[in-house]
Length: 185
Image (cartoon, rainbow, N blue to C red; front, top):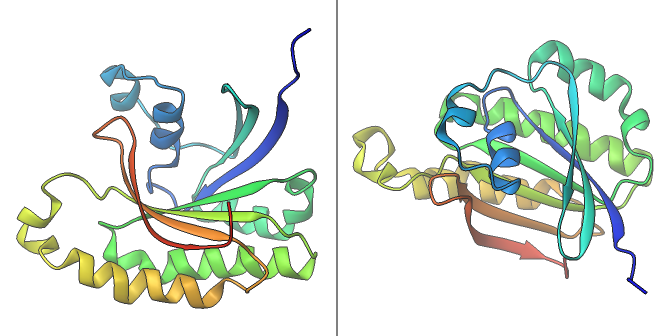
């Protein structure tokens, strides 16, 4: 008799062009370069199933364009039934939109707290690519990320939520480095 795996529902959220769908492709172990090159912005919501050794995952990939974000927030309750985790993705190379990315994350957290939905929150500080610091524009990216993202994210997430913050890149078939954690995810 085989033991049934538990089903996990994960919302994959963030601004447009933050890399959510690329992360999903990496998680699905799709290493075909053409898959990445042919990616187009996610329009609306796309649900993918992923089978792992421990879980059956339903990953809800939310398009990050402004018109979709507004609708998700207005109708957030529609997406949170049986929710286990939120993965929020921020493009570390898009420094000009850090405040907008943090505002959207704060809105999501506010709605979770309002509806008393306690789930694990994972933040991917994404596109932390190899050799990034060799580009003069990003030579101080670690300091900028800590000051403008890590510290602010840590402060905005209420104490009752477990969270993890990772530096991520798809260049090493989805490498992630834990940089901050609270709770036992």
